Length: 128
Image 1 (tube, rainbow, N blue to C red):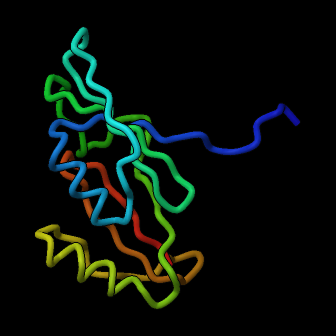
Image 2: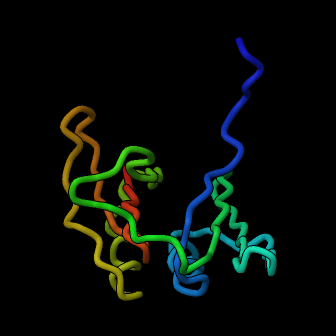
């Protein structure tokens, strides 16, 4: 159609490099590159997992994410979890100090799912 052949990467603004790195590592992403930009006073952390590239712009100068009411734009990042593995993933996150919601079932697909917030409040959906 237009020559688009897929998703290249997802860029996220993060306030704390180490907290965000640890969180996304808990979800199975691995750092592939780190770039300091002294002229902008930030760090870009590239992470990869499951065929997805995350580009984390780490800079505490951005305002917090509005959550109630939600602002326009990206609502959440949804990651597919292997069938039957949702409890394994949420248990691992709880053990690392994160607070995933209790699993529930998608009202349209009836698949198990839950949400957990990253260190800056971005909702991450985990969906079987």
